[in-house]
Amino acid sequence: MSAQIIDGKALARQLRIGFRQRVEQLKARGVAPGLAVILVGDNPASRVYVGNKIKACEECGVRSLHLGLAADVSQAEVLRTIEQLNQDDSIHGILIQLPLPPHIQLARVLEAISVHKDVDGFHLYNVGALVSGNSIFPPCTPYGVQLLLDTTGIDVAGKNAVVVGASNIVGKPMGLMLLQREATVTICHAKTRDLAQHTILADILIVAAGKPGLIVPQMVKEGAIVIDVGINRLPDGRIVGDVCFEAVKEKASWITPVPGGVGPMTVTMLIENTLRSAERAFKTAGEAAFQAWEAPTVKSP
Ligand code: NAD
Image (cartoon, rainbow, N blue to C red; front, top):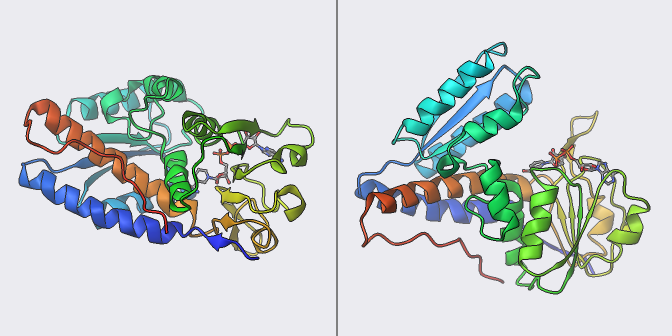
């Protein structure tokens, strides 16, 4: 039987409606949530990603500040820009679009962003908080995957979850989040021997390798939930994931498409983290009556 499709676009749309209400609530209390996006250089793909983030802000009523810095900007200047944004009370989230030019040390830049405004969740403190199971700003892509999994109504606890890809921004935090929800987690990567022997055991298979066609049906357990994080542009211009969608959907119970699966959720969770930051800043400023932030929940069908 063909898998049910997990529709990331629809879920993102639904969440963003809720965001607009939260923005209105904040504005009624005199807080206009603001996100600053720093782009260093002129990488065309990065420009598209930044454009999508700004658009999502507009859609939800979040103020966005786009700071474009020249490709040869000094590291000191980038750090100064971040420090100014850290001090700016009208900015609740700061993100720096990756990758950075090679003369800028990524670790230095990520650690310069205030932990309280680190809406990408890449600061060491936020990474550590994720490890200890107490995350502040969960990194956006795995956070989005978590909500997509919720839509299936299937409890992750006790399931075999296999993550293919071990990057700092997707694979590793994804593994930690699944572990936090008591799945039995395996993280595979480019050096994993016989990938299929791991993936075939997965009740939940999450693929983030950036390799089109990597996951074929023979590697997938009958009835598995398959989440495809990969985004790959083929020579003919088509965008595909890492999973052979048409064939694998005949074996899986649930599957995400590419495009329209994880992608729309990543930007949506960035807005979620920004609103959460604004709400927290407001609470810290001290109106006890204000409703505390609650993690978005998704009803199962
Ligand atoms: P990355 O290049 O930093 O990491 C890729 C990981 O996959 C590495 O751990 C590598 O060891 C592993 N890998 C590579 N080839 C493999 C193979 N043959 N078998 C097993 N593991 C293999 O990439 P990333 O930033 O984590 O992104 C991964 C993919 O997800 C890319 O296609 C990227 O475009 C996409 N992505 C999508 C979103 C989204 O919002 N949908 C967000 C981030 C990344």
